[in-house]
Length: 335
Image (cartoon, rainbow, N blue to C red; front, side):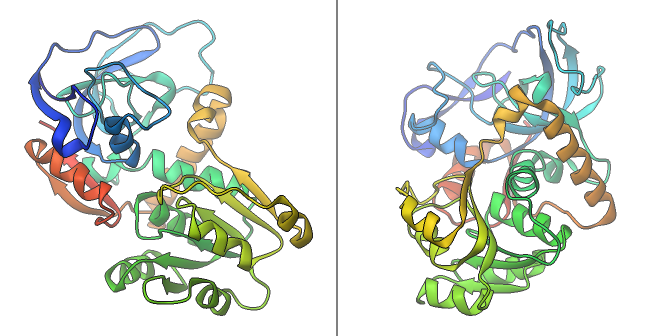
C-alpha cells in the first residue's frame, strides 16, 4: 500500500519518503482502518524530528489522528475498559493511531481505546480533527480547570488547531473568551469561532493588551499551548483563584514557574496530558466525545479545515503546520 515513511530524523519535508509498504497486521486491542483523512498535528512534526516523547523505531509511518473506515477488528484484550465502544467492519471512526502504523498511509492501526464513532454531521476531513484538539480543549477546560459559565477564558494561539478548539469549547460552555493570535487574518478566524475579544500579539505589549481585554478582575482560566512569553504574560493577568492550564510548548520554551508568585496571587497551574486518559480513565474521553458530538449536532462546534491537500502533498502540509502558517486544521486526504 501507499505510505509516507520517516526513515531518518529531521524536518518532515526533508525526511518523509513516499513508500510502498505491507498492510498493517491487526493485533489484539486494535482496529485495522482504511484511512479517509488525516488531520496534521504538531506531534507529527516533533516525531519526525525525534523530539516527541514517543520515539518509534525507524522507519515509521506518522500521522497520529484520522477519520477512517474499519476493515478488521482485533481481539479484545483482557481488561479493556467498559467505556470503549464496540466497532464492526464498515463503521466510520475517528481518533488516534498506533504509530509506527500511523495515518499517512492507505491503512493504519487504531487502538480501540483511541477510536470513537465519527459524527454523521461532519465530513471526513472535519471529523479527522475532532479527537485530539477538541478533547484536549474539553478535558482541559472542564475537568482540569473547572471552567464555569460567565467566567473569562484566555486562549493563546487561538487560531491554531487546539487553540481554536478551546475557543469553540469555551464559548459553548458559556465563558467570555479572549483570544490571543498573531496577525489580522488569525484574529478574524478567532472572532468567527466565538471569541468575544481578540488580542493581536504582534507589534503590541501583550501584557498591557491582555489586561485591557480581561478587565480588572483578570482571567479566571488561561489555556496555554504555547509556553514561553505566553505563559509569563498569563501569570500577570490571571485572576484570584484563577487556573492556568498548560497543554504544550509550541514556542519551544518550557517555563520554569515561580511558585512563590502562584502562592502570593493565589492561582493554580495545572497540566494536561490528554492521552493519559485513554490509558488511565477512558470514561473521561468517552464523555468528552459524546458532548463534543452533541455540540456538533447543535452547531456549537465545527472543526475548521483551512486546507485540504492530496495524499501526495503530505510533506508540504506538515511543513506549513510546522511553520505556524495555518489556521484551524490542515488535512491530508486519503490515498
